[in-house]
Length: 329
Image 1 (cartoon, rainbow, N blue to C red):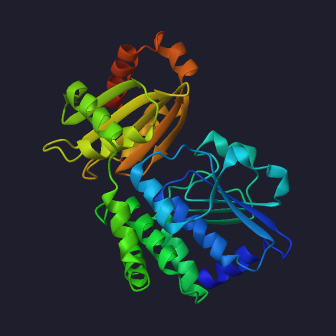
Image 2 (cartoon, rainbow, N blue to C red):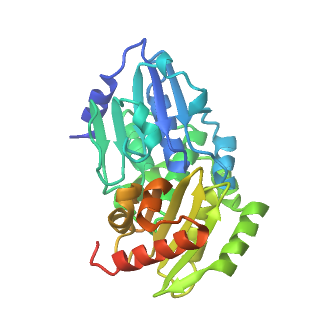
């Protein structure tokens, strides 16, 4: 089915009186994709609101919001009953329990298919970024993106493909080339330079001192954390270390064990590995080179007894070592 045919089906979900809520787990790809939904529905519906449930603390994400002005709202501040059409982009409803309170009318995503029950579904796992799908939507409607929107979409593609070094396709490259002619590249530069805060550097220092390297896999369990995004920063950084091909970083946030995994993409898939290892304790999955798990500490306690810092760290190492030793692709 062509993008034009898909969009025709997508637009059939709405009327002039529709009040649309786009729910996202905010990162550059999700933010940019949601901005396209708002642009596509401009003057076609009564209202479009973009709401996120995660805490945004990474300096690059905050800079993107500042410079592209997507108009995000916090989901807890939203009255669900004020909306009658619900859309999720760059995620699927089973990726996080925060999505469970909604019956989504449209799902648009690029992650492996895990939930496709909606009136409109466009999930393309072969794409490196949801922003690429959304760029194709704009092109099929002959909508020229604004400088800010084009910059946001470029950042979405660059972030989720790690500058085209992981999970990228020719579709992503072509979308990026198309956007380049319209984007404000000053925005892209400013956002990419906003990499660390002083707090991030302090946390990174702790991780460097506390790291464990086993079979070319680097582990660090932080214990309680105030910002899960710090785990992502460390996971990405550790993968740049020579001879390290897996980075497994974890911490406890709001009574959940968060595990971030990165790998070099040359061996076993991170997404399938984390799903195999941890899905019985909560949500777990991702791509070949990057994955995330958010696990229920109560279920883990039943399995291992104690969920102290040392016990959790040792348990994660044992489970990953056991699972990564299998042939999981």
